[in-house]
Length: 358
Image (cartoon, rainbow, N blue to C red; front, top):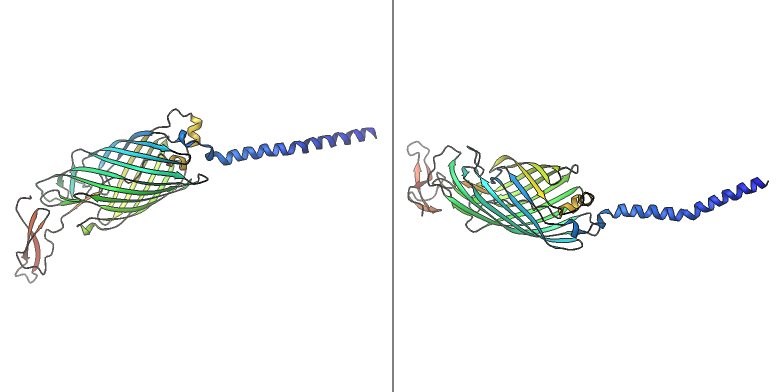
């Protein structure tokens, strides 16, 4: 009987001890869970958002050159949940592949230096599950021209200069990313390239929608609309697909495929390597390696001045104009002439008058 009483008391004591410690164990477990849940909330952006710089390169695409250069991201002001920044690129532009024009007809030659600058503001939502951003800036592109890949002999090749202002909107979550942009040529937007073709910078408006397949792989599909001031044959819509792979921290390779009626199908590749994170430990870096936090210091996309060329008037119809009517297009004189007389298929076409380009 006494043994039964003692056993009962012992069990009661153990039960009481367990019940008394229960809230403590529960609180500890809850605190650990809260720490895990907070995770990204504990990151101090002033530690995570630092100056970074590196190298980038790309192969020629739809109106864009072979290029390689250096770039830098500079946080100007970092708040508790936001960053105001400057993002600058300096690229050497190289010649097109022999026999393949990046601007449709005329091959780009030689080496020039292009620039791109952005000022922007990025911020996180309350639970840091999304990053949003706005940016705007200026881009420049000098361009040397050479022969035509159409087989047409051209003379009077010129070196020209194009420039644009740009604006963009961004949104990034753990899985999705959205990027809307507009490129607006300014200054002398269309210029004579040679005695046959003239070139122009393209107005381009687009939206990319991306998805993080894995932490290393990212894919996106985009729509864009392009038009030139006076090159209506190149107006129209296009699609752009991208696939990128982060080989290691800071090093990313990508492939891009685009299609539109002006440039048709174009395939290009790109590479980027960025240094940064200051004196952060590996543990800190790992904590910051979430798509949302990393997006705060990513370089802004869509920076190239896109250029095309066309021969818009040579041998095009001038029906309804009196024969020998003349017109001046980019410093070149054309007159309306008859063609096919006596064949039963008479037409009226603009023809070039060989006078010096002013």
